[in-house]
View 1: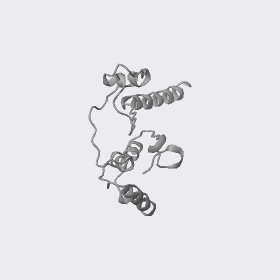
View 2: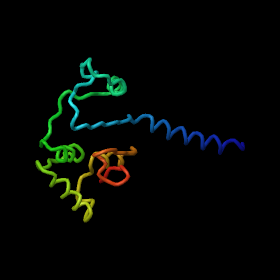
View 3: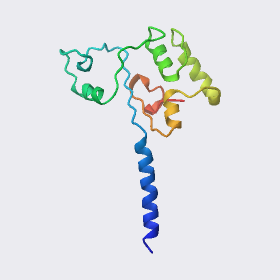
View 4: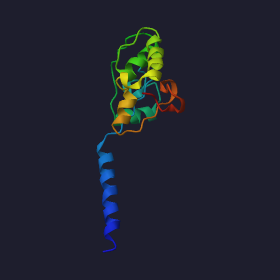
Amino acid sequence: MKMAPFFTVLLVCFAFVTEAAARPNVLLICVDDLRPELNCFGKDYIHSPHIDALAEKGRIFQNHYVNAPTCGASRYTLLTGTYGTSSNAALFSRAGKLKKETEAFPPSMPAWFRENGYTTVSVGKDSHRPGGRGGP
C-alpha cells in the first residue's frame, strides 16, 4: 500500500479545488466617468467587444446612484458601504483612523472578500494602497 499516501494527498488537493470552484468569480469594474454608451447597453456606434463579452457572461447595472457628485466620496461609499461626505474628508479620515485601530471599523468590500477566501486586487484609482492590494 505504498500508494495510499499519494492517493490521500491527491484526495485532499481535489477537495480544495472543488471548494474553490464553488465560489463565484467576482470582477467589479468601476469607471466613474464613462457614460453607458457601450454596445452592451444598446449603443451600436461604440465598438467595445471585450467589455460586451464580459457583460454577456455577467451582470450589468442599468442604474447607479451616488451620495456625492465627486468620485472620491462615491468610491468611499461603494468600497466601505458607509455614507461619505460630499468631499473626500471621509476617505482621509478613515485612513487616519485605520492607522490607529483597524478593529474599530467594519471591513471594506475588498477586506470582506479577502476574509472570505478571495484574492483581491485593485487597479487604478481604486487602489488606495501601494501595490494595488486594496485596503482594510
